[in-house]
Image 1: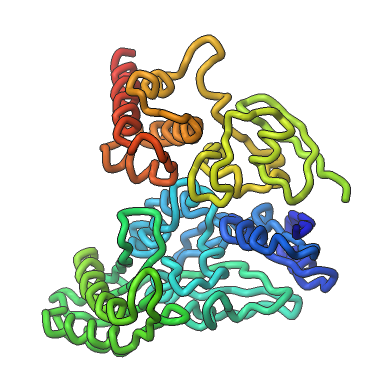
Image 2: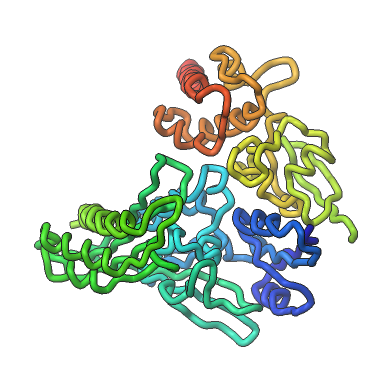
Length: 290
Length: 162
């Protein structure tokens, strides 16, 4: 049985010092919905482990809208996040991605920062953060650094954070006028499942409905969520007509490098990711306020 | 290793307990505080049998460390209804025979109360999605949903009568 030592620091500096201390392996405890289960899975281990509960640190569980963008405390629960109408108005796709994670009970604890740091290839919020050009503010004993979400995750369950570092903030810039987003995932059930394929799209339209800017990100079809500039390029400059959507879908399918597993075959995922990119594009475009 | 002292409010009354840092809230409720209405099903956050509220939010007690609830408000099945009278939700579960073995029932009633506190007039689809994290292997859910919808209608009706 892993022996747990618990600490609940009230400042970022104390948290970083605890995480940087080499005395025993340390984990950040936010919602705990992944961490507790992963720790129990190591039942045979006799090691001691430090859980640094970051929820008592001011700002870690709050969400502030500023003129520049959304300052998101990484340990905010999905339930609290999805209940915020001001956030939904600007980033409806990001809110719907957060609302897809687990059950009501899981939503009560699971956090956006946890979804990011757990770094699953199928994490629902990651493509939605990527299309919104979100950045991670990471703090360590050497100071702060910023990393884009598309560069944060490095592989299955791994990311760019080093021991002693803490994800302090997720910053989501304010979208330019006439921009909106959408996130879709495919699961074979109607609720409580992990994405077989996920797709996030953000589009900016001009007054005539022509696409001025786009970002497309796909999930569960590679070791990490991918930004697909080729799919965005197929949309930009078009009226999002059938030919443009088909070209974007083909670009997404071409960028996907899926595996076959119990939830779907590689061929199936490669096809469905294109379908979801098309549909998410239309939903995002429909949400653009005139 | 020394135990940690935790002070918390459970069903609006103050409780103190000692726990190991690795103990879950579920362990403490059942084994230290004898509040055994909260059930252990899967222990991994999948089944919802251990549903409780934490500062008003529905959570699985098996995925909360007991040390984390210091200063927080916990709500369990023991806080719903009185010893001599049932809550409307409990009455409707009985009336519609929305249970068989009963292991999922406390969790479902805690979740239904959280649903109706948040959304007093849910559609059937909203109720089904909200309760998707509460698994029942006996009833097939139909009677549960009938009980939930009847409870919502009854509580809504009571409000109109005030």
